[in-house]
Image 1 (cartoon, rainbow, N blue to C red):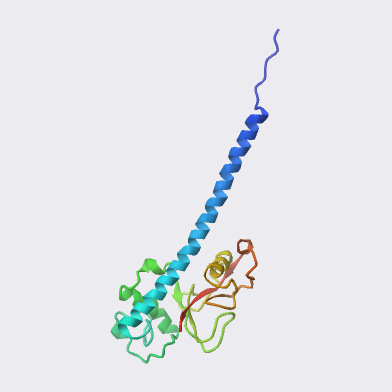
Image 2: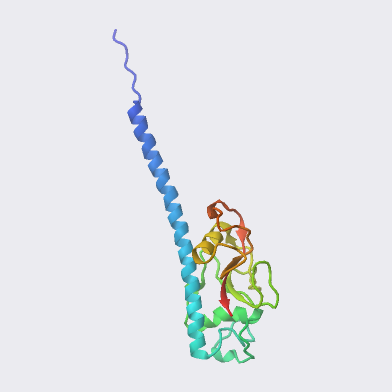
Length: 203
């Protein structure tokens, strides 16, 4: 009686399967890197758009958006008739992006961050806060709905990568600031947690 031949995979077939699995996993990781890179470019583009919007508003109305606004959501430019000193307090900072949208210089999509919440402009303060410079306003993710001060709301990896792409890669200097402690030589994608981030706007 002839012996029954058992089926199975050859070494070549197993090797081919392993190569295919490796290629699929490699594409998945590469795809994630591409998505993260696109998010960094999106943040840069939003910052440049907000900065251009501020300049356009200044050229048209002779003042920075929000400056002199006594209310956080002005219905028109004429509502911002208070004293203008070139620096934004808390209410003026809240009014800044609102008035840019009211005047249709920016849209709501222009200020929606990749982190799922809208950007805000932080108030200028007389004293420095952490790595953020005194008397300066930043485009930031706010600490809460009632305060536009920078809050730890952004992925540390992307904050570091953004700092490196736009600036000097250091959290305490340049136009991009954060409350992180990374160095210019660190691997950004090895970081974890959340950081406050700010991109300098005014003055």
